[in-house]
Length: 344
Image 1 (cartoon, rainbow, N blue to C red):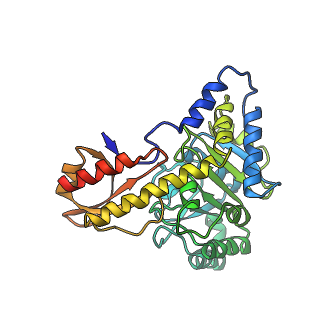
Image 2: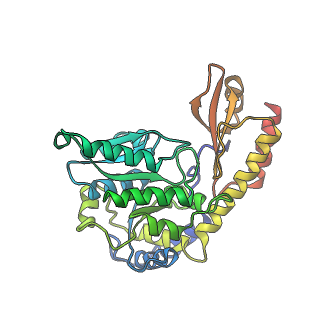
Image 3: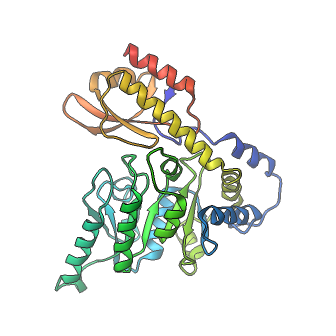
């Protein structure tokens, strides 16, 4: 069956599979102390142009968000996020499970606005009873957002300025970071992110790896005993080499950026196919996630041959759905999809 359901429905890019097979019988120290994790860390520091950065590897996005947020917050603090943010609605209360409140602020095309963050903090600071309240302790954003949209460099700078004004760390969820960086419509580079964010992560699970996220503490600001906190949260992998080999491969010869660019190229062609078929877009996305509006009757018929994700009800007869491309999407996939759209 043809699928555009998500960008992690296939295994991993062949370069990673070959590297895992090639290194399979090597002996390596555990818990990230192996040469591949060390090599991957060095390569990531170089691409970020941050020699003082510290890199940690964690298996998945929810684990990463949970561990990073809970390790940076004091027990009386919460995290600010967009109402549509991943930690707000798609992580089963993982952040709240650690005892930290998620403050949901309004979103504009999936993004937070610096002015809304500042207003929220100012209202809190002026509250007479704030000692009885949860303190805003950090800000969480994702790039790309849940809607496949991107922060501009100016937007990112404005949010960073507000965070630093109120001494709150800025944390960027980069589960799909490669697709944001390779978008044809972005002015944000990975070096900008490394400069403006206090911590971010480079997603591997959704960008060509079997699993894994690389967390980057950008200013030598990794919390003390972070390995211990990873272990307390069940996020410390004994065979850390499995993550090290993957990220060492992804950051050799710009592979991470090449496969992400391929997904963007496929998404642009998918967009053209939708436009030619007269299918309206739910919103404009410059990344690998494309959102269109289909009649419910057409969804039922098309879903027998194509995998995609229902996203949001538009009205009683129409639903917004998501088509996602990835490193493994082919021209043949798009040709087949075009024919199916014509016949359905």
